[in-house]
Image (cartoon, rainbow, N blue to C red; front, side):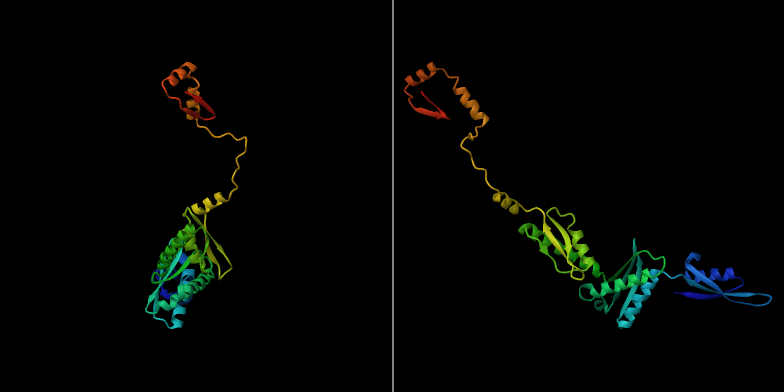
Length: 265
């Protein structure tokens, strides 16, 4: 927490000078009168301090951890829509990231605890190292789509390896709009993992239909006849016997079959 001591001709003037030096407003400061001196022309010494902020406490904590680790890194804080982003860069940033970001996640979790310990803080803390998280999101998104294609093609659920909450959210988000698979998490921390389940699979649906019992044809079941065949046979019945005899005299004595009835011409 930054603070300055300012001496001026009045307490109010000293406070204003202290605010200007710190670059903060009166609502963001704490101050108190240190001493009052002078008989004729009095002087007032005021100590002006910035109110503790969660993001400043988190920044100091992260810098302190990196310094104690003896790493050559710098930390910059940026304001985001819903919180604060702490970007770590430098020669030893790989050690701060750790295996698949495990050190980075631990540092982020502890920084959030420090920030939440300050009264009035309400925001999100993200600790990143040279854009590692965005790169990790791209890798996990490609992995999710590839495994989703495999699950939908084979019709079998696919279990991913255990992941932290951030990585699981990436998988769920990447497949949230997929029409052929759905996702859910199983297991207990720190071994909780994502399962990709196929929702629709043509081969499986055909297999399920083939497993259904077939309806046996009964003896009384009549064969299906289309409307065109019915009209055709009905038209044949309109032929009179005289036309049939005349047709027979011409030498065409073949037997034709139309359905159940037979006619001889």
